[in-house]
Amino acid sequence: MKSISKVALRILAIYFLVEFLSSGFPQLFGIFRMGQSIGYMMTTTIILSQLIKLLAALYIWFAADKISNYLVNKKEEKLEKIDYQKLQIIAYSVVAIVLLIITIPELLKYLLMSFSSRGGVMPVMMRELAPVGFKVVIALWLLLDTKRITKKLE
Image (cartoon, rainbow, N blue to C red):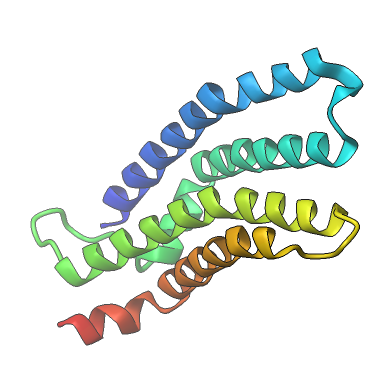
């Protein structure tokens, strides 16, 4: 199971790296091309969100062994016997990691934009911020309470 989770994490890291290359580079080059015409807060938000994606991809790639040790028991199991409960735990954890890596930069973007506005958190911004915050809560719940969730689903 550890090897399966390690492979799944590496695939996830490749996905996030490709996501960074396909969406992050154009945004970063657009910022440098526009120069001072966009605001400081917008520039910081875009750079920070793309940097988080890149760092998350690199961390998942290089720490896949540590993360898989956390997700699965540290002892290596035989490949012949597949424990589907552990496989379900791995799947929920990977979904939670994907949700966190996708939504945390988005959450930071909305938080920075809302605090940079003069009137505080605008109702329009709150409408955008609430679903993103809800996604983060669900992802953290999936990641931190995975074992109990799988036991309840049995």
